[in-house]
Picture 1 (tube, each protein chain N blue to C red):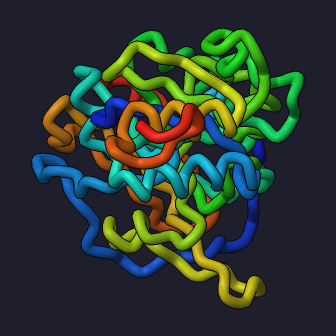
Picture 2: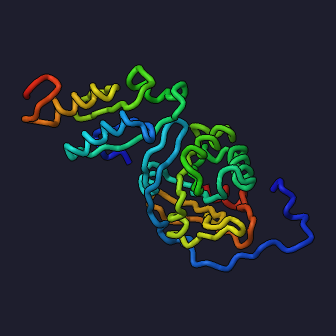
Picture 3: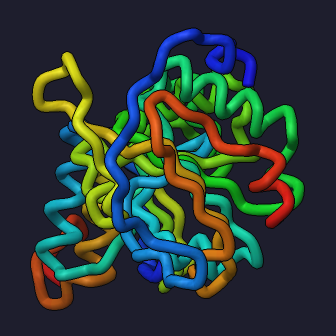
Amino acid sequence: MSESDITLYRLQACPFCERVVRKLNEYGLDYQSRFVEPMHADRDVVKRLSGKRTVPAIVDENTGVTMSESANIVAYLERTYGEGEETAWGVA
Amino acid sequence: MGCGLMDLDFDIVDLDPVDHPEEGDTAPDFTRPLVNDEFWEDESLASVCADSDRVVLVFHAMDGAFPATYIWNEIRDRAWHEQATVVGVSISTPYEHKQLLEEREIEGDYRLFSDPANGVAQQYSIDMDLDGMAGVEEPRPSVFVLDSDRTIEYAWVAQEWPDFPDYDEVEAHL
């Protein structure tokens, strides 16, 4: 079912994950959500992908990028999909 | 069957006949969160079927009820996953499904669709109210064996409650 290029690993009701969702929606990006365990120790799938057990984490097959930490992800999305907008790096 | 139902000396509840999908029909498609050993994501029955020659769709009682426990123990012991892609459906949440996969020790071999509003059962016309649990409904126990185009090769829908599939009969269609 993973037709989307972007996969978002998230935890239900996690505000950091919702922050990334808002950004994805802002840019109209199609994404597939994968919900993981509330128990940090059980999140092996995320650990295998990103090296960390934290969510949110995204895998973007457009660019081959795998990334965690919401601030990093938001900056990445702005940089990659938010042409002409102000980014974490200044004005693009 | 393991629960001794055959020895009862009284009648169990008969269910009214329903017009459910039959052998030869195309099983209605649906999308619901599909829970595996590590995460859940929205997935369609069509995409599950597209990945496999043989899919067994098992509608069962809510996780924690003894029929759910018995049916998954039996399927696990018969190792149906070696012959088919086997997916369950119940009204339980993804969190409860994670627990069922763990407790039945079927993580990695089987996956479960979560359908708390019972909409899939309604689509298949196999929804039933639960006596004594106001506002709660769930699917009748049912098993559908599908090919990769979702054509139904075998269908069993419970006519009484509780009831269990004829496991040998299902297995003959794998």
